[in-house]
Length: 139
Image (tube, rainbow, N blue to C red; front, side, top):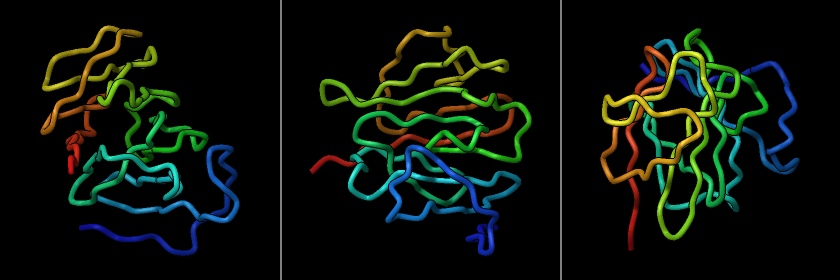
């Protein structure tokens, strides 16, 4: 069940523009606080549950800490600053930022600090429970 949260507690995210409010969605046991303004969204997407979010056209920080622009709450196995996905040379890449419980790409563990290319349909698992699917829109 997906629920768009209302009456959420206020918080500050340095990656969020003042004129744009973050989107807060609960999908399953995970709450996603998504703070990538429309001007910065790229053509890569992550799907959590049945909700799809655009990745940044530059870099998307992922973790439990609310300073991340893709904040995953409700899963204690996700590190505060877990991973990042960035756009370079017309491709998206993922890096595990020394997370405690690891990041997996298509069920294969990532070496911390190494970059891995994402391909359309890739499955990304953060920690133990949170699984996302990567897709890329190409015109």
